[in-house]
Length: 551
Image 1 (cartoon, rainbow, N blue to C red):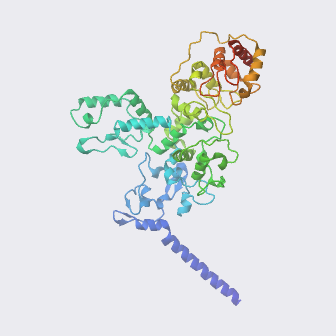
Image 2 (cartoon, helix red, strand yellow):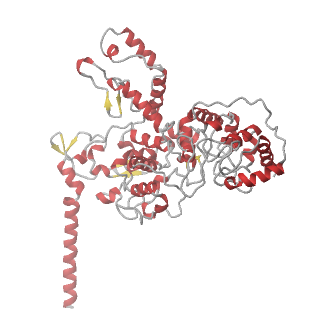
């Protein structure tokens, strides 16, 4: 009995001490209490207590403002340590949407590690600070983003023309200068959302002509058509998240859409990336990922060495710089399409998901770099990855001089069945007819403006001995194009789209003249390893190739 009393006594004392410590910890030691205790409003203490943002429409209850006090509604004037600073300016109020919808993390937690999601099994940890703009992708789908070259050209025009003298853009410019230069014009950081006056140049020119002195006279001059076009592309991309737009522009520059879909548009060779930013780090293999086991580190290592990071990955090593890897990691993290009630859907996402607006610019250069450059190279001169068959050069002047626009359009539209070249004009998530035409026009431009030579002959005019052509093919062509024309080092010739679209002149000229700077030599000229083919032999070869059409 005595032992039982002692056990009851000391266990009660232990529980009492535990409760006292818990109460002391909860009311005195919590980090959020210390932060609030060090903060003040106009040199007066603030009320210490849990704060939270509740948004029933989004099912959000975030207590982040218990530490980040200045980001709460009506508390932007709080003074104290840096953690209580107000949110940087953005188009909407953080207090209306909460914190975790953009930044990730565990909103109802009150401990730092828990709130930031830096704990095991929490599927949505907070985005690293350097990738904060990636959170915009939760709700937004920025539209008509060009490739990186066009974006940099527009930015260069904006700075070269000194638009920053009067306008603020992404935190820069728009301040008065010594000597009366410049003025405080409209902030252009959000023109991608809010739009701008399309007649701005005419109005600016009129103001400049009417002014006698001051910034209108000193800071503005007429802007050429090319610069105005570049400025229009650049301003249409300004949504207040410049790093995210740059990341998306890079994604549109390295050919990723040739293999991957985003928002239903793109290729099928790789996984759909539309929601790749929502991956649970706890489900990833970090065996070959150096550094911390974070999703951003996993993505960066995957871009450096895809097959080493994901066993069996078919993605080639792209040879990206570290700056490019950083930007692409940002873009992947931004692909996190949260389901939102209609009242919260921004216009750009509605346009993209419900009305088919393109997230990429539809000029030929952007479409080519987004869909084609990954295989054919940024210059269109072909490309080859280790362990793969080469992709053909499509800006070769020998090709462009004999390929009609109709032939190239047919190739892009119908692809090459059985090969990696998809039917971009026929597949779901492919290209529209006007986009195909833009690509064809850009190919001509990229190839130096080479136009097709006039061809008065009919499409099919060769009539020769196919059996003789078969012997010639086996002797000179099968080594590269395959025994049955199935392709190898050279393109597949036994392909229904190629055979239906190519004219006899196209085939005769290609065999006779070859393609400069490629492995395809001209067979009308002899070499040390083979004799030249006569005109009749080349035509016999074409007749044999045509026999595959019937099969």
